Picture 1 (cartoon, rainbow, N blue to C red):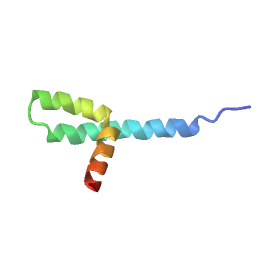
Picture 2: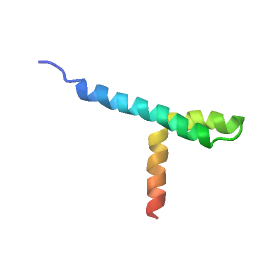
Picture 3: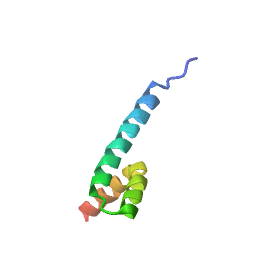
Picture 4: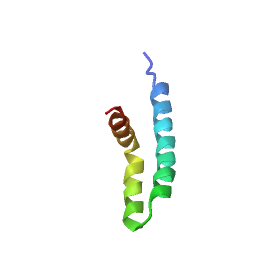
Length: 59
């Protein structure tokens, strides 16, 4: 029996590209030192921020 890890690898690659894209986006929006530090945090947890904004838009 073989294992199929191909689908998991592609999901990790998409998440990794999303992190870099989120870092660019949040970094451009930041204005000071602490906002840039927070942008690094937001870049790692970008899916949570995306879901939060989607639910906020549904209100």
